[in-house]
Length: 161
Image (cartoon, rainbow, N blue to C red; front, side, top):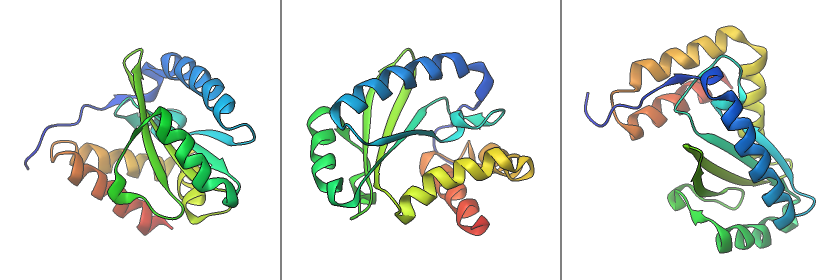
């Protein structure tokens, strides 16, 4: 395997810090885009899971608001993974806070991307066996670098749909 190892920790080790960062960011985001639904997604939103220790936020806006909302977020945050952007997904990074990296995914309500982020979180919360399999994929690929790690996770997500 090649690439930098990805350190993994149990979600409960940073739960309190992540909750505080999410609460602060949620307030900021609600002020920027009133009416947006703001969801804590990703592994730190799944009790007992393994995580890199980052906070993923999914902002959900009405479809016609997506482009304008993307511009509002781009004026405040760094654009992240532009190669993955589409007509229904824009991603950003907020400054690290209290040692927690923060990612923000913007999606339109009812889109496949909303179902991907929110639905996957909900499935992991509801299905301990799926969460265990997801954690094991992370463990197996944590030494292969970030690209391999993300690809392995995405493969499991797609296979589980």
